[in-house]
Amino acid sequence: METVEAGRWVKIRYRLELTKEGSEEGIDATSKGEHEAIFIYGVEEQVPSLEAALKGAKKGDEMEFTVPPEELYGSYIPSLVKEIPKKGLLRQRLKEGQYYRQIKRSALVSFKVLKVNEDTVLADFNPPLAGIGARLWLKVLDVWQASEEEIKRASESQAKRKIGCG
Image (tube, rainbow, N blue to C red; front, side, top):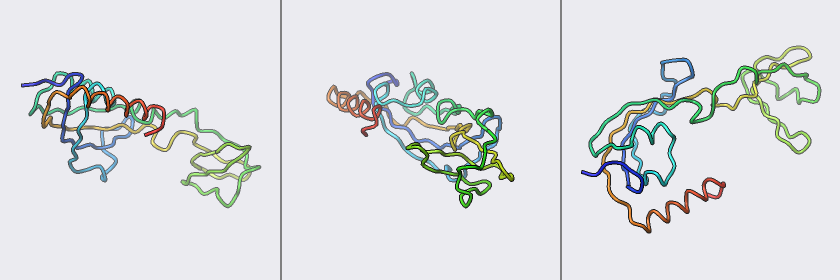
């Protein structure tokens, strides 16, 4: 029976639940349900936790593991919450709990409005999904050797994705 290693196709069935940093509870009911994925291990890049969990696995193996926020959208950084002046901001867009976006000096300014004060705004500049990790349950459905041509195509496709072309 083949084991998961570089250059082999891996077909998995998985279920995932998004988790908030520092909490054991799942936060995303929309991620419920099972999904399938197929990829060439070691060629088509996956998050490090998934690659580590799958290494050496065989058809039929089941596992559960977590993917930390650092491997997805990054940790939540409290110092990115700043009190900023209202001056120069479009007041009609300043709604608590909403994201504010405006082009200023040819650059996008984007933040979550936490609180609107008389002359200032408490703004959170963290990415919207910062601090979000995942809990995965998966089963290895199949493992088989990829051909040289399949590996070449997958490598080219992966390289394009890394530079934003795919």
